Amino acid sequence: MMNRILLAVFHLVVGFTSSAQQLTVSDAESKIAFVIKNIGLDVDGTLKGLKGTMQFDAKNLSASAFDMTVDVNTINTGIDKRDNDLKKEGFFDIAKYPTMRIATTQIVSKGGNNFKAIANLTIKNITRKIGFDFTALPTATGYRFKSSFTINRRDFGVGGGSLIMGDIVTVNLDVTAKK
Image (cartoon, rainbow, N blue to C red; front, side, top):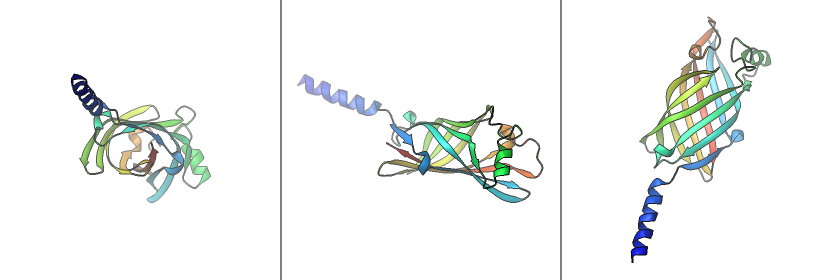
């Protein structure tokens, strides 16, 4: 009888202290896109090379965390000359800073599949705390995370004092992660 009680207590403790599901990001199935104004017109672009770690459990958010990088050398706006300019010192300076990083410090539920993340975003070795809402949609093989948020490029020293380029960048994330 005592063994059964101990076994039941063990299963309860293990069940309550289990860690979040380790997920593997699928760069091929994910999309990181951005939009910024240039001379008053929208310029769309994408980034690839998404890597990092993701743990996620909607029922155990304290054990959930994302720590991801993206390869800035993959920037693609559809115009090679512009892409090459964006890789230079005045913009992303990929020779010194080849990746951008986002690492969550907290994830909270907003109900259903909706969540809010507080994270540190690092671009050009400048780190700023940001907050953004996201959805976590369960799939047959893991999750699909979607979010849209804005940042100010000047907060990260990107583009200097350009007067023809807008300051606000809209970032759209559509990340597929698998168990």
